[in-house]
Image (cartoon, rainbow, N blue to C red; front, side, top):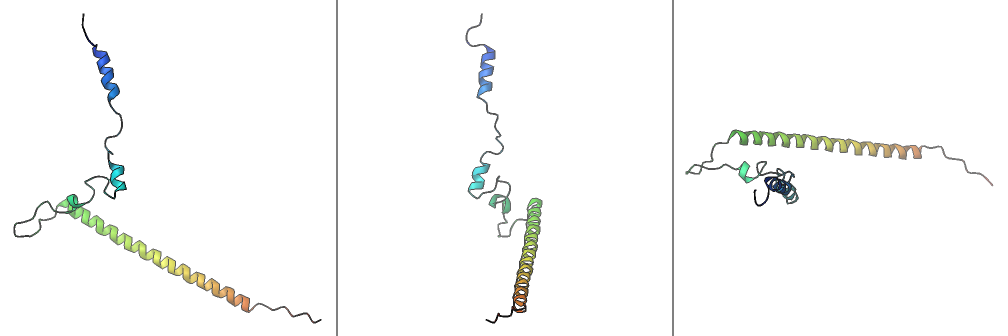
Length: 120
């Protein structure tokens, strides 16, 4: 005869105390709310700055990941400028069209036939 708790009850007790939640996104919402990256490897000084430099002050050569990230940022900035210019041009054309419509309305009101006044 065995004394104590059976193996199956210990197994079930331990199984019930485990969480099934996602550990991968722990702290992700907190980081977003405080203005940080979702994870530490997305951007920031730990990923953007070099790990070391030469003793004479020269910077370390860039790594492939850093070069790729710089190129992606340049492409993104170029696209942002392009889209911003397109929006500005669209707004300018829209305002010019609105002004033209307003001028046409004024012209139509001025050239409308006037009703003759009734003589009494």
